[in-house]
Length: 354
Image (cartoon, rainbow, N blue to C red):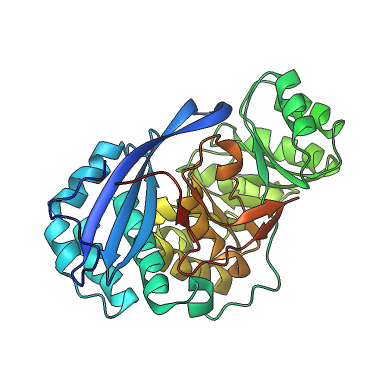
C-alpha cells in the first residue's frame, strides 16, 4: 500500500506525498562488471495536488549505496517541507526542495520527476512541449545485452532484433565476445565496461572495436582514474563516454579533455531540472550528450523520453528488460521511441497503488 500520513481525498488543493515499493522482475539475469540481479527494487512516488497525481521513480542501487529504505527515510524526514512548499512554479518548487535532499539525489529525482509529471497534468501539456522542444528528430534507444555465457548473449540478440545494442563487458575475453556477436548482427554496437579496464586495454580494444562497428566506449576506467583517462582520450580511436565519472552538475566541466561525451542519469544527478542544466553545459563545451537509465520502469523512462530532442544518444530500454512493468509511457519500435500522448511526462500507472 502507499504510505501516507494524511487521509486520501479525491479533491485536494494541498500537496500530498505518497509512495510505494515494487519489485521489477527481469526477463534474464542482468550482469555487468560490478553487479548482477534478477529483481530490481524500485520506489514510486506520487505527488497529488489540485486533484491530479504526478509520478516519479527511484530504483535501489547497490553501487551508489542507495537502498530504497534510505530514500523513504529522507522523504519522511522532509514530508512537511514537500507538502507545504508552494507549487505555483515548477522550477521554484524543485529548487526550494533541493537543499533538503543534499546527498540523496535518488530521493530528489523521484520528487523532481513526480513534480514535472504533476505540473504537466495540471496544465494540460506534455513536459517536452512546456520546454518548447522539437520532437521531429530524436535518437534511437539501444537495447542492452548484459554479461553472460557467449551462447546466451548471441541468443538474446537473435531473439530481439534491434538496430543498436549496448554490450556490457568487463570479462577476460571481451574482444572475442564482440567479434562473436558481430557475426550475429550488423547492428550498431556500443560497449560499456563499467570501470573494468585499464588505459592500455582500452586503447588496444578501441582500434579493434572500431573495425567491428562499435560506435563508442562507455566508462572504461575507474571513475577516479583521470591520469589513465588522459591517455585514453589522447590515443583512443573511438569516442569515450563518461558515466560513473559524471554524476552531478559539478562533474561535467572536468570531463572536458578526458571524455568525448557524458552519460547523464536522472537518479544520479537529481532529476530533470538538473539534467537539463547538465545537458546545456555539456553541449556548450562541445561534449556529446547521452541519457541512460537504471533498469527502471516506464515511470522513470517516461521522464527520460521528454529529454529526447536534446540528446545525441539515449539508453532507455528499462521496460524492454522487465516482465512486469507497472506503468505505460513511451512505446518502442525497432529502436524508435514513440512518445506517449499523455500530458506531464506521459506516464500512466497500471498497477494498483492504493
